[in-house]
Length: 267
Length: 290
Image (cartoon, rainbow over all chains, first blue to last red; front, top):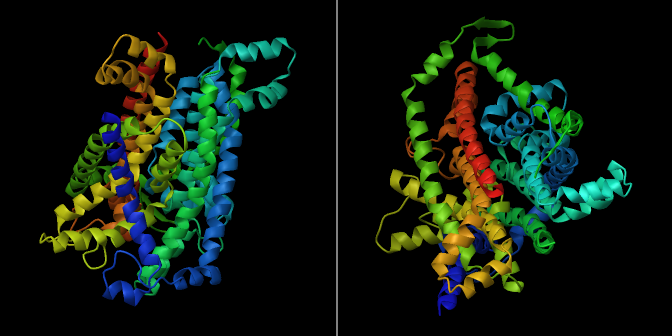
């Protein structure tokens, strides 16, 4: 009986979680006039006009492409630099290790609002404003420390004896790292990539400041179009729904990785 | 686990060091530079020492924003941590139901922050929103743009809606890492569900929960986009949190000096909390090893 009560509570919670998203979906399938005039639980006359507008207007769909490009770049850079660093933190003791680790953490916690102006000047100096790499690098500020932190946790779960055995078996370090170690923490890498994607995808303040047109993220496109056309709720809702789609896909892939990671934890 | 002692490990750290230094130290030095000068334009700048810091520290609106921020973060932690753990305990441990729960839970986390604000505007507006119109049709007037209490309620609801899933996911990962043998042992001993929770699940989740606490505190302390979209800091200054106030000064009024001094103070506060949490985390991990 307890189990059943729990399940009901969980279903209610998930329902409430989904409700605001459903409401936006509802709005996105209706015209603006319909939204303002009638209160309806579901669209009585669903229309895809809002979505068609986004898919046919380059100033809209380019926003999605831009976002995906810089998020992918950021995830790649973060993982590449964080993997060796996390290995060092989990395996070695060296001068200043604790201080560097703490310093990295503080950057994860740094308020983006603080870095707004200096970032703009720094990237202007290097001529990087309005490029994808600028946003990708700026997001490294919080994603690299986070990656190091998560990966270090996963690596700490792998006994050091595995490294020692591999070295005795005559593995060179790079070969050991790529052939033995990385497969072992595959789940950790999946989880890290998920978090990098997530925090880069949702961040707007820095992404908006560092771009004007060529690399403008979708979230910024939304805010501008809202102020330009008055409030077209239907279009806004459709754009919002479409920002959820890439995230949903990523979760779907990580879900499998999480399951594998669980099996791995028992080894 | 004892570690090898080797200073050449620094070579592994180097790429991270370079990339974070580029996006952290250089901008921070610029902020320090601004905070001690009065800048009128290119070439016209005067050294003013600690003048801006004095001005900012005596600014009563900043004090208000700080208290508001602390209250907000405190409430967020009080609601989200217990709720997150409770939800994680109810989740099925394997199978398709578990996967489905994970996917639904992670959805709010992957929505861009200003879209979160947009969702909640659409959801709570008295004219077109589901929640807004339902509450108003029940005879209670509800308008988050006019009433400070309603604005806070909406913000808290949005924050809990948005971030509790992160606590759930972390707690759930911690729960799944507990070997089945622990539960079997508890069953043999005839332990009650509460005893299992108190003596097996909670201690095993201590690590992930500390991380959840740290992440939730820091992120709620830095909150910007969602209240900016939803309330714009209003009504009045009722929801003007630290970041919103900072951007108002820096971009709205373009007062670079005070904004920079404010930034540094803001950063120092965060550094202090970060250090406290880091110490707590070290203590937890040390406790697990011994």
